[in-house]
Length: 128
Image 1 (cartoon, rainbow, N blue to C red):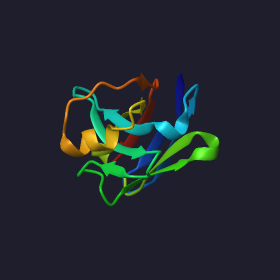
Image 2: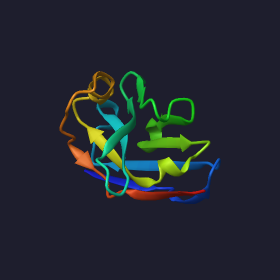
Image 3: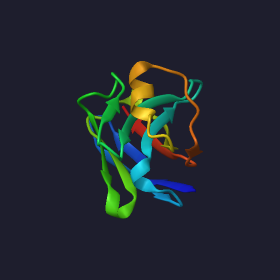
Image 4: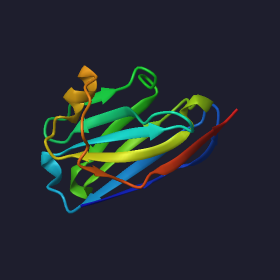
């Protein structure tokens, strides 16, 4: 299984970026794919997730209304469109794949959960 993130970069406050997570070696339709982020000195947090099977989604309160997650099942790729970026969004963003498909439920319930596969991350820097 391989998850490859792309799309990170440096953007000014109020700007936009679109992250991509390309998955290979998985039965894509059975999975839930999530985006996590880790800022310097902080714990990794779940930002958004999508169930490929039923299309349900999760957003952390801090990104609701600004970030949109979507999937292109034909390309085995999940996107995270990030608008109205703020300096507090600066972090390394990681793609995560959950084979059980329960990630959206788990994050919505605030449960601790083990992720099956992680990408290597892409850095997003928002300058003020």
